[in-house]
Amino acid sequence: MPTIESYLRSMERTFSRERARDKCAALQYTFTGSQRGVCHAVIENGALCVGMGPHPAPTASVTCDFDLWMRIMAYELDGLLAYQDGLFSADGDIETLLESDSWFVRAV
Image (cartoon, rainbow, N blue to C red; front, side, top):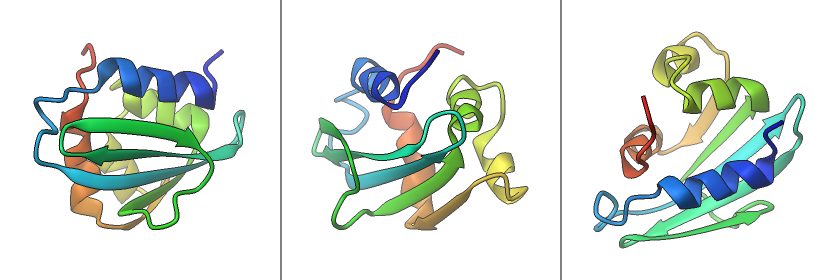
């Protein structure tokens, strides 16, 4: 069963330094449902640092059911359509949040 910690480890495994070379963002995730908690990822000039708990100044924040987010991350559900359908909420710089997907290499 996936956990928030395993999600953070998968971010570390799939992060592409090349794709995020000139990017800076702090992404915060608040999960509900089967896994509850807050975590964040800081991307700065090709480096990634993940952690549990809230970030003091996130660029973008997501609030989502954990299992739904895992389906989005597995490309079983389109993230943009799920957002537009109100299945999860996001605040802050939504463009950066959408772009951040390209900073990670995941199997399709």
